[in-house]
Image 1 (cartoon, one colour):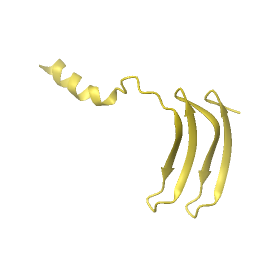
Image 2 (cartoon, rainbow, N blue to C red):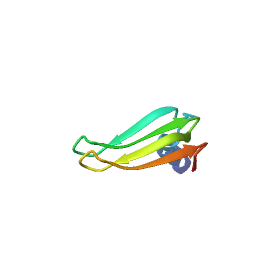
Image 3 (cartoon, rainbow, N blue to C red):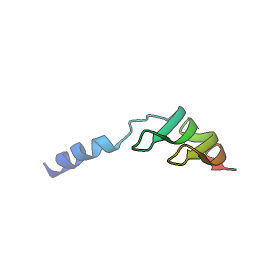
Image 4 (cartoon, one colour):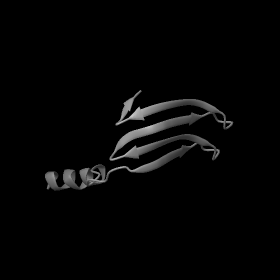
Amino acid sequence: MKKLLLLILFIPLVSFGQVKNGLYSSYYESGELESTVSFVDDLKQGEAKTYGKTGELESTVNFVDGIKQ
């Protein structure tokens, strides 16, 4: 019974093979854009940008196959 309970608790943590593809954005509680990053086959690709709470661009980092350039 313990093993079944542990398995049931673990299932939500498994991604079931879902791979990130496309542009992902995060936002501050205020609704302002916090960051953007593109993924291809679960690896960061291209420019990742972070923004301050007032909307100003703070940094831009380029990724190739998940590796910061």
